[in-house]
Figure 1 (cartoon, rainbow, N blue to C red):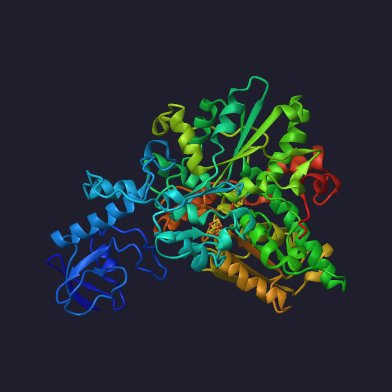
Figure 2: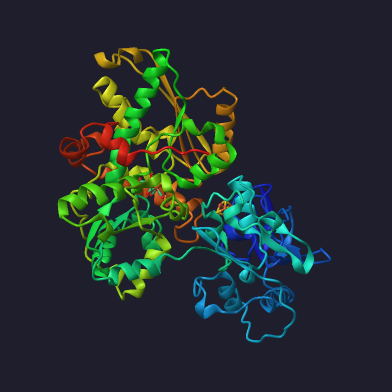
Length: 585
Ligand code: HC1
Ligand code: SF4
C-alpha cells in the first residue's frame, strides 16, 4: 500500500493507483472529461489537475501515480482558476445551443460549468470548422459540440478494437472522426454506439427515432405495436432516478400503454423462439460434422447487429459461421406482420412495429434488405432506452408512481432463459439449457441451471459439457464434449474470429455480443455505464430469470402453440421464410 495525504486527509491506496483514483476511492471527487474507468488514460483535457506539493506545475491527476508521502490538494485557488480557464477556453469554441441540444440537462460540460460557477463568456474568438454527419442510420456526429476529450477515441480503439474514431488534423483544426473525413456510414463503424455512451456532450448521439414514433402514434390509420428488449427492464429506471439494477418491467408496460401503443409485446418471447431455432441449427451443424458432411463450425450467434457489421467488415469470408437466425426483435416483427396481422385482421401495411432496444446498431439492422418480408421491414422504428425515457417524460407520465402492467398475449410470455439474453453469456446459457435437454432428455447438470463460468464481465469466457447417454436420435453425440466460448465487446470477437480464420478454433458454438457486458451496457442504455452499474443490471437480469416459474425456452407454452398452429417445426419452411436470413459480404 502507498500512504499519501489528499486535502489534509491521510489515505492508503494500492501501489500503482493514480492520484485521481486514490481521491475517488476516498470520496474526493475531481472533475474530469477524458478519464474513463479501467482503460489507459491520455490526460488530454487537464480538467483533473491538482497541486502536488514539491511539483513545479499542476499535475493531471489521472496521469500521475500516487507515491509514498505525497501531499495533494485537489481544490486550491490555483487549481480552481486553472480549471475555470480551461473550461472557458473550451466554451469559447462551443455552439452553446444547449436548449435545443439532445443532451440538455444531461450534459457533463453543462454540469461542470455550473460546478465551476462560470458566469461570464470572457473569451470570444474564431470557431473551429464544424460538420454534422448524419450518414449513419444509428449515430449522429456533430463536431461543433465536440470538446476533444477523446473518450470516444479510447472506447472505439481500446475497448471495441474498431478504431474508426481518431484525432484528425492538428492544433486548432483537430477534429475527432474517421480518417480522410469519411462519413461514419462509409467508415468501418459497427454502429455499436459505445461512443455515444461516453461522449460527455452532444457530439455523438443516437439518431432520433422519437419523432417517427410520435407520428405513428398520432396517425389514426396505424395500429402501433411495441416490443421491449430483455435489457431495458433492468436499466430504464435509471433515467427516472432509480438505483441501477431496479427492475421496472411492470411500470414500463403501463407507461407504454398510457402513451397509446395498441399492443405491448416482449422481445423475450422471440428470444425463446430464437433458442429453439438456433439450438436446432447448432445440432444440425454438429450432426453434419459428425457424419462427415461439410459444416461451418463453430456456429456463431447472430443477434447483435453491431457484431454482424463488424464481421462483415473484418472477416467477410467467415460469414457462413453466423447462425442464420434473425435477431429476436426482427423475428418478433416478422411474426407481428404475418401471424398477428392475420389473427387480428389488420393488414401488414397498417401495422407500425416499434422496438425498444438498448442498442443503436438496431436502428441500422431494421433497414437491412435481408431482413424484410414481402417488401415490408420487420420493424419500423427502434427507440433506445434513453429515447423511450424522453418520450415517457414528454407524455407527462409520472413513471415512479405507475402500477405494474402485463405484456399482451400471445407474444408477451417468456421464460427466464429469454431474460438472460440481456447479459453476456446469457444466450449461450439459454441455448445449452434447451440443447442439453433436447439431446439427453435431462436438465443441464449444473446447480440451478446456471453455467457460471459463462457469466461476468471477462472479455472471453469458455465452458465444456460432455454429452452422456443421449436419446437415440442423438446417439452420434455420445461422449462428445461440447466446447463453447462467449465474448462481449468487439475486441474479444476479433480474437475468437482470428482463431476461426486460422482454422484453429476448438469451439462448437460462440456467443458474440457487440457491447462489453452484453446488451445491459448497449450503446443506447442510460449514461453512465461503468462496471459497478453493469454488475447491478446483470444481477437484476439473473433475478428476473430466477423468479420465473419457467426457465427454459422449450417450456414456453406459447412457443409450442406457435409451432403447432403456424410455424409447424423448428427450421421448417415457414421458419426459414420468416425467422432466418443470410448475410453476404
Ligand atoms: Fe439484445 Fe437481443 S438480447 S440483441 O442483446 O438477442 O439490443 O436486450 O433485444 O433482438 O432478445 C439488444 C437486449 C435484444 C435481440 C433479444
Ligand atoms: Fe466506434 Fe462503435 Fe462509435 Fe462506431 S459506433 S465510432 S464502432 S464506438
